[in-house]
Image 1 (cartoon, rainbow, N blue to C red):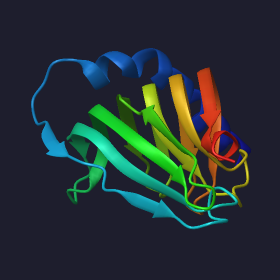
Image 2 (cartoon, one colour):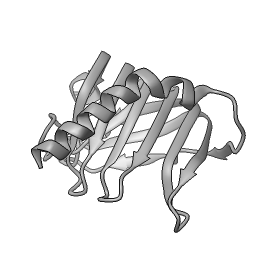
Image 3 (spheres, rainbow, N blue to C red):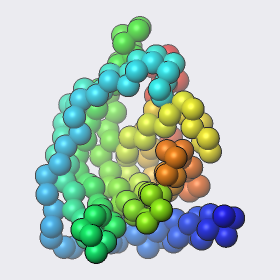
Image 4 (cartoon, one colour):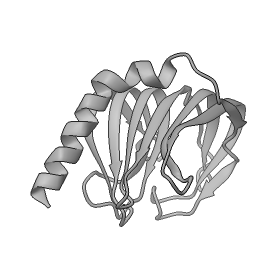
Length: 169
């Protein structure tokens, strides 16, 4: 297990340095996608309920690699995304730019490794093991490993992270 984890972390670090060009380089296959408005119940991510209203959304996605069964092996997400976050208990609101790029690698065991660049939204369950729970806005280069059990690690953090649970409290 330790060897597998080390290999996954090494692959994640390589993605930070090499994945950037692939995620934003030339190529077709882009399709429109969008993020729907959302409500995260109290206790799931923050101690209070968080409502997300989409202000601007011009996202797109593509699947440059698939497994033989057609399921995604690699997916890219890019485009404009601006979200208004509201703490529904005290009505405090902030607007955040989550415009960035994400490249997701889907491993056969169910692990997902995501490379985030620019501004991105990153909700992490309050019960997460491996990284503190919160509703984060990232700015920079990050690698997020989502294990099959749903727990997430963030082994590469080159930039800033704002925890909206703290901002909206």
